[in-house]
Amino acid sequence: MGIFGRKNETTATPGTAATAVSPDLAALTGTYTLDPTHTTIGFVARHAMVTNVKGGFGDFTGTLTLDGSDPSNSTAEIDVAMDSVDTGNADRDGHLKNADFFKTDEFPKMTFRSTKAEALGGDDYRITGDLTILGTTRPLSIDLEFNGSATDPFGNERVGFEGTASILRSEWGLTWNAALETGGVLVSDKIKLVFDISAIKNA
Image 1 (cartoon, rainbow, N blue to C red):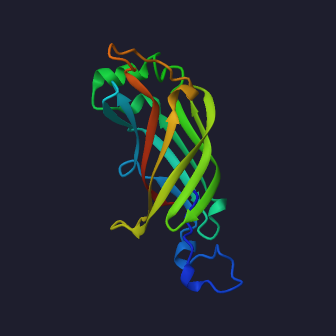
Image 2 (image 1 turned 45 degrees about the vertical axis):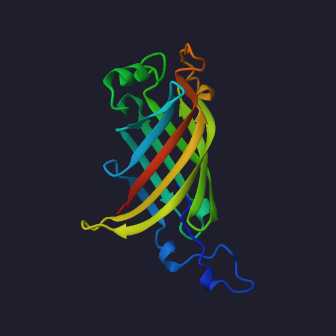
C-alpha cells in the first residue's frame, strides 16, 4: 500500500529534496503478501440508529509492492471472498450473502486496485484506488498509519499498517433497508472500513 517512506528530517539540509528517506526505510522496498492470520479487513455499520455492528471477512488475498525510497511508486491489490463475511451471527451473515446485499452467487469477490499513493507526513499515508463491489467500481481513499517493520521469530520480514475509510454503500448498489417505526432506517448507508494489516516480504 504504497506509502512507506517516512521523511528523515535529521538528514535534511538546505537544497536537499524533502522526500529523502533513511536507508532503513529504503530497505523496505519489495513485494509483500498479506498474512491472513494477522490481518483484519473489517467494517462497522450503524444498526437501528442506536448501535454499531462490526464484521469482517475471513478469506482474502493481497499483495503490497512498496517503494521505500519513493512512496508514490508503491501499489496494493486485495481480493476478498464475499461469502466469508462474519458478523458473529449466522442469520445476519446469511442475509448479507443473499440478494438483498452482497449477492455472493453472482458477485463472489470484492476487489481493490490502487491507483495512487501519497506520503502525508510522519507515519501517515493515503492510498487511493478502485473498489469494486457488485460489479460497480468507484474510487476509494484509505488513510493509513505505518506501524513499523520487524523480523519475526521465523525469519519473516514484516511490515504493519492500520487504516480506515468511509463509504456510502448505496454508491455500490447496496441499497436494501427497512424503515423503523420511530423514524430512521435499520442499516446505515455510511459504512466504516477498518484495516489492520500485517504483510510478509516475498523471498
